[in-house]
Image (cartoon, rainbow, N blue to C red; front, top):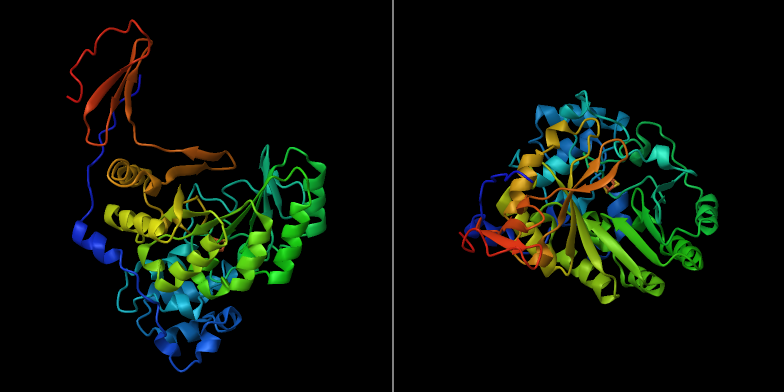
Length: 403
Ligand code: SF4
């Protein structure tokens, strides 16, 4: 018997929903003098990232004291880097800009709390060779680099990415591949990091080729935030490389509808045209996407970009991220506002990665109100209650349907 959790019903605000769903270009902002060739060149974007307090202050005089202090300390915790393209999505006049909270360091990152950890998913303890995590029986996480196009302030792998804490990550592709070759139970390899799409086309192709040559590897996946931070990287050339190694899926990482610009929609279209199934992983974040209307707009916009919302993660207990963590209660409220209220394809699975390495645990609003050998009592998205028989002689419903 389960208890019936009463959750607040909130269908979102239709006016805000529509305005959040418009597709805009990130524009050129401070970089209007740069040639189109340079601006569209992903290597130019990487070379010209904002990485210091001086650069940030020059471009954004509205920096708050918390942001200034956070940026000064970032290089000893998780480096700051923001591509010019992504910087243009920040609203410098709005202290609560959801893009700003994701990439500009804050003083709160130095706060500690009882529950926090440096490796909340227990990856290091499931790592048979450097850069390979083998936690589930039939699949592995293959870390290819510690670099990203920009750094998310809540990153689960902040112990490792950007090397600000001196983790000194050196993937050894030969050893990682050898381990996969020797373990026939591994049928699924997820490339992640850091961001695998930061590798050159040649390096990426060599890696995919070597993995595809292993007979028991059925399925390849890439986890990447590049289409969001650096859509210029999704060139026809890299799409041509990727499409040779099907079945290959890509999970992107986007959190807010404003991240889905016209540039991103085009980049995702190129990947989809290369036959790559696209999913999205979001992290539930305070100040960013912990409102029903924002989440609905984001999920619906992802479908318009040919991306299926896959997971919504409760933010891991990574040290220095408490200011960005929304409550599980709020996550459940949002999930309750989705099922039945919008297209089923738009509804991600909400999960908590069990602290310490327990793996993903699905978290759902309660739709089963009670069950016994005779019948199951369920509620629908409108809160109406129904009964379903468990056996042929269960007898008629105790209550009329839909009361
Ligand atoms: S892109 Fe991914 S790996 Fe890189 S900082 Fe963001 S969450 Fe971490």
